[in-house]
Amino acid sequence: MSPPYGGVQARATWALAADDCKPVGRAHDELSLKERAHKVEESLTLYSGFYGEAECQQIEQFVDATAIGVAAGHFHAPGTVDPTPHRTKYFFGIGYTYGSGSGKEELIPEGTVDPIPTWLEQLVIAPLVQKGMVPRGWVDSAVMNDYRLGGSIVAHVDPPQLFARPIFAASFFCPAQLVFGASFDPERRKPPVYSQPMPRGSVLSMDGYAADCETHGMRPEDMFGTRRVSIVLRHVLQEAPRVGLKSHGERQDINEADRSALIRQVQGRWRDPSSRYFYEVRHLKVFVSEIQDGDQEPTRKATWRLAPREHGLVCNRGLLAPDGVSPGRLEWSPLRRTSSDVTWVWLSADVA
Ligand code: OGA
Ligand code: MN
Image: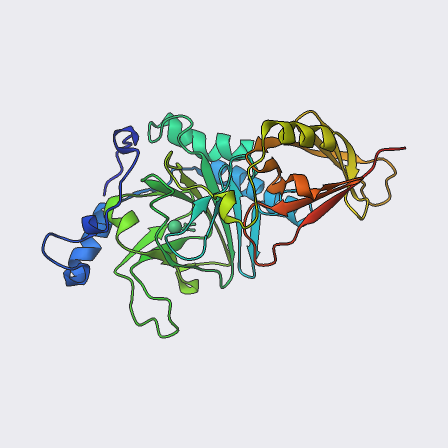
């Protein structure tokens, strides 16, 4: 499709009915490959050269700084970054879990994922707002994929219960193509129904049939260089399912008084067991600092928020329930289900 800068207000939500994917009276697989390719093409819009050379360079520098910052331990939310050998994913704004299978994806409570960084807001999202493609504030979830040589993203559909359509993907560093309807088996038995080039500095908008009815992905052979970064910009649906902490086993609702008691109990200075990180809790704010190698005094690293929730206090993707509190010790459990379900501990750092 040719790219007029159309807004998304008119159809901020695209209700997915599996039936919308099939022509009346025919099964999905009765559509010819040619018809499918046409329907994909029709619902994609590529804005090439959306970011100019200077903008690309600036954005790429911030991408590098983010990756280096993470590697150096500057990010404190363990769940913001999901590293795999050839691809690192960064979640900003509103995060989500993969649940226990496709279709089970759920949002994790607000405030448990790092906010969208200012550079990303100003350099990547603002141009979409300026051109009238999205309303201000519409993009509330940004995921950055940093692919290295051999990197890929397996065929998938962005969870329709979580994200409004269209979905925007901005591309940086080397060019690539997004393949629709392709299989990822070693023999590549199903070649792509449609391949969409994604040059550096472009924005791809995926809507309708392309977003809902065919899978998309990127095989290693679809990346034309050694490093590619995509930034996926989406709007989370108001009615999207949220992680129910209740389903997380023994978590219980607590009352007002328990919550107030918890807030009182966490006030003060805490440290991690290695005494590298310090957490100073004042009211509902947590000031995080780190003792860097060779330093005596801690350096201020971040400010987190404590959010009172139905099951306790939430801070930086962790939940503190009343049973996690013992004298001089706080035990946090992950909000997001993880394979290991590790907990982490803060010990009192108050000088007696
Ligand atoms: C995604 C996705 C495509 C890309 O993160 O959901 O489809 O170009 N990414 O990286
Ligand atoms: Mn996707």
